[in-house]
Image (cartoon, rainbow, N blue to C red; front, side):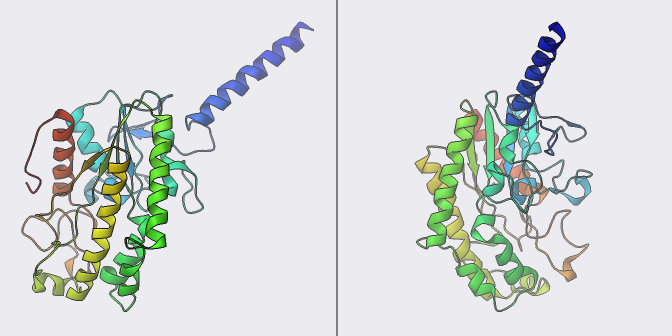
Amino acid sequence: MGRIVAAVLVLAVVAVLCTQSALYGNGSFYHRYQTDGVNYIPDLPGGAQYVSMGDSYAAAGSHSKRLPLDLCARNADDLGHVIAQRMQPQSFTDRACSGATLDDLTQQTVQNDRAPQMYGIGPFTRLITLVAGANSLGFGGLITNCFVIPNDRCSVSAGMNLPGSDGWRFVKAQYLATIDVLHKYAPSAIIMLVGYLPLFALDGPVDTGCLGTAHIPMRNVELWRTWYRGLEQLVKEVAAERKLLYIAPPTGHPACTDDPYVALQGVDLRGHGPDAYGLHPTVAGQRAMGNLVEDRLRGRSRTPSA
């Protein structure tokens, strides 16, 4: 009889541990880790103190510092690593993943075989930076049709999910609900929404020689400008309605300037541009965003375009 009771107790303990493991993303079904830029270690029960979340604009950095065996294309000098280096948190988890949509933050999707990004957070999390929304608004189709292989579908991609449309309102509602989930599981965390570094100047002419080298028509830049304003409006409104800190991106260093914070992409540009992923932040861009995040957290001010 005693052996039966002991066996039952063991099974009960195992069940409790498995439940806690699933709650915090440590179940064997999930791919999960945090990184200090060199080593990977399991997520801490209860969540890391600082967690970087979002899409490729958070995960991008230099090609030369791409983290090995990382299907999310994270880099040891991406936004999360820059902020962690500045703030020196007790623990840091880089959950950002290239291609991530808002769905990927809170649930496992068909396109994403990794755990939801929220599995890196918990009661002990004190800071979350989030760069998200672009892919849910169709960023992938826009960059493909407008910049990677410019074609007639650019105007369609850029015209989808603009402010006032059903698609834009749906994404905003989803964004707000996502923030509520993050607050629920990390109630003590400061959540900062980080804006997207612009690919091009938001108005005025763009160096036609630079655009020509990348085979990008000026008309496509104008279409992107309309779409980008809708994206930034989305992030700003969500931050305002949930009373979150919002970090406006510097706008003075777009592509086709001497010190770009984003890189262009094109066959003719290979080997001649910065050590960065095309149409994504450069290392200088991530450092600039990291500076603004640090300054906001420490209560300092810095010229946004610096």
